Image 1 (cartoon, rainbow, N blue to C red):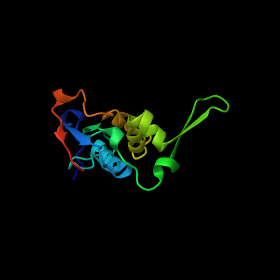
Image 2 (image 1 turned 90 degrees about the vertical axis):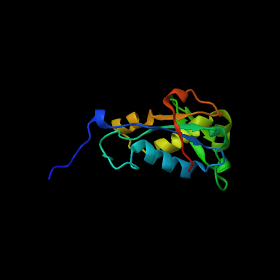
Image 3 (image 1 turned 45 degrees about the vertical axis):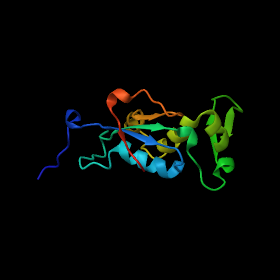
Image 4 (image 1 turned 135 degrees about the vertical axis):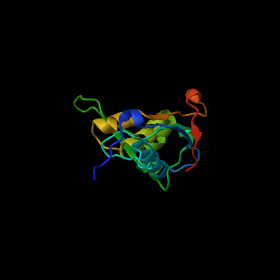
Length: 142
């Protein structure tokens, strides 16, 4: 018996909208990562991008539990000596709320060319509106 691998043309990619208002960042990110990866489909193949597109709105209203707002630290490196930059989760939510969710989801995806292809299917917006109405996304409650 041969194992069936779906072709890229045979895969269907749906669009989902998730409202992040009042949602815990980590718990929401795990479910988003599963949808992006395609693990919720019967045709899941680990070496193909068979997942769906996810649009996250209201990223500015996502919540952290406990003292993570002040204790969680995001670091980045500029490439220069002494160029390490750090921000707390509170600062990131105020300045760049999209990056908080993108960072959490990226941590749950494979770190290779497949993961880089998958993360492009995640669209995060700070407010209520998004420019993807033409794709007719379905509401998804977590």
